[in-house]
Length: 68
Image (cartoon, rainbow, N blue to C red):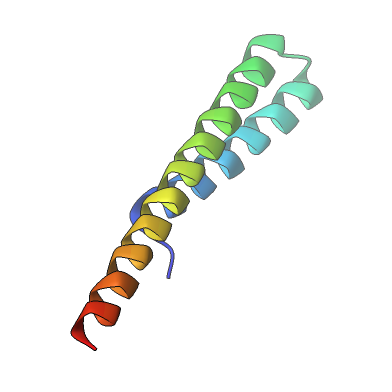
């Protein structure tokens, strides 16, 4: 199951893509660049969330093996 960071990262990426598209349509380079930044931050946040989830799952697996 995805965690909060993964979900927020996806949202940031979508928001960034929307800003880029709006910037392209309106020829607003600042808005387009802001969208690129938002998308990059979202991607990093999603990656961090995915890593946290994987570490948590690995710890749970180790705990299950220790119980046996």
